[in-house]
Image (cartoon, rainbow, N blue to C red; front, side):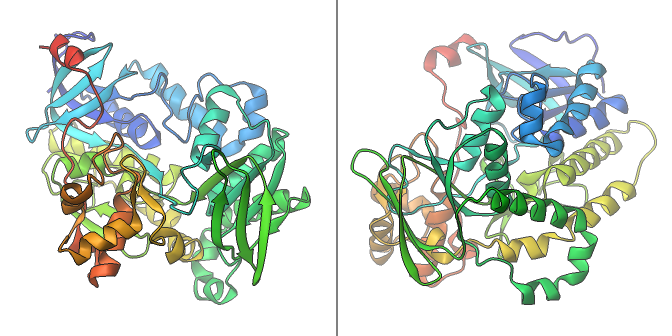
Length: 465
């Protein structure tokens, strides 16, 4: 129940009806839905303002940046404004570094640790970019498209040298269009998808018509890129980034011809995948999604995990986009209110119907922008674990020596034990082992994620005791 006697401060221990982790569209919607039904809610996020990655810095942007980033970004102003107007308890700069089985949340904030007890938990940590291990991807001058967009949203920082964008998926086209509006010199777009697969489009004709709004946006971005005269290469393969101490050149094949482009900056992207580090640390049940080629948590119709009282909403539950995330967040907030006995029980039918409508186009997108095997399961010489500099070949050798899963690679080579804790290599390691051992990714499994989920010092830990 609500406990108004607990002040909103950094006391070493807090008690809440609901804690929401992540202030993107799913987290904001979940917190608002629960608060409106009378729950005592605390919204946690690492960033200084609400918005998450998709609406990053939305409360502090200006008109010029809004024009560059587009209407879908500006839409987030409304949701962020509702959070601000609601008086919702929101802790910015809060890093969740551990969650106990009883749902106690341990947070690092203002250089001290705080323990928060909660009756329910909504995890809304969103997505992360899929690893894109190609030769040279660890060179200075190689970034992800998501990192480029963060710099644009946070501080209006754009490349000052010509840039090459390489990969596949809607975000790659969106960033290219945003960079064009910002006056960035784009040397080329290297699209690793094969272009429009008309046979696939015909098979998914009904879904494409139902999701025509998404199709129209995608076609508009492509027109914007191509009308600017940007060299656009389709069905790119054999991608490699060359240079000694920094990027000097990108090599690839397209339409059966070898190509080379001189450049100093390359942005890579081949889609996003659920950020499941928190749910893995809780030992929640997960399954391998053969369509999205990633791990997703097993959830019920409300977004509840295999652990009672713990919900996941948004792209962390499976990639669906910002509007789906917002609806899933609202559904989770309603579910928590129902479970704790706040107000009349609601069935969430409206949210489910809208989610289903938005997701109708997803099977087509999953196939159209399915990352090629060569960019997910790299050649032997390619570094897979950037933190510990472990190559794909080393992992294959470990399999031949008896390694049966990602956890064993830690013993063989410290793979997955660096600062990123497997975020950048986990999916790749699972797929390499599965291919080499002739197993399914489901049988191979994933890293056993342990706290701390975020780095903290002994001094910070001691400051909360």
